[in-house]
Length: 257
Image (cartoon, rainbow, N blue to C red):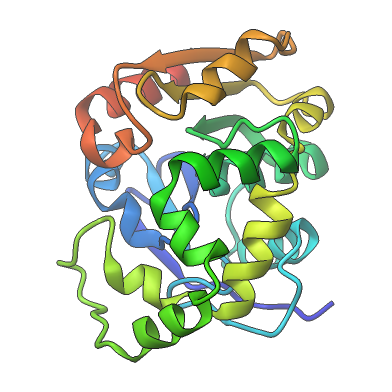
């Protein structure tokens, strides 16, 4: 397996504990621009563009869990990140963070998962996205999706740090292989409840009360291991962008326990 180096945005206090941040689908390190500012005085923040996203390499791969985790692990070793560190992921990044923790438990002191897709199986994900996700219906399931993406990639993109946390430029910068492979293998893998059972790291799972209803319904029907603490915020899918102060309080409270 090739040793890819991911693009990293490093900020904060180099003498303080490290938080590694993994963004979600159709995003980049820019997603964390607001929460990073809240935490930088007391933590060293290392935010990574996932493989195939943002400014990271975009090889022609399957974009499986193994591909993403190998790139993350290689990058953290290259950066010389002190261990153990806190690993924080949002949405698809939370799924990857959880799988990473099952393989590199000794590297992680605490795991924080914001808004992971809590699907029980692939068919549930497909049905939910087709029924309620207009963006997913157009981008992933319509007959004309390839022309849609081709047109999108031809439009001008911004790399400015002033661009929004949720940015058209980040959506357009995904490689086709990363877009299709990550959606199918990571989000569509629907293995989060199995991975919870394999993970022994102290874990905070943060949900949004106004995120997809199916997530909370699935969570009610599952008994999570004792190492997992669940918090439900009065928020949707993007509390790290739209409920920054509350997210900051939740993160800090968990890290000082």
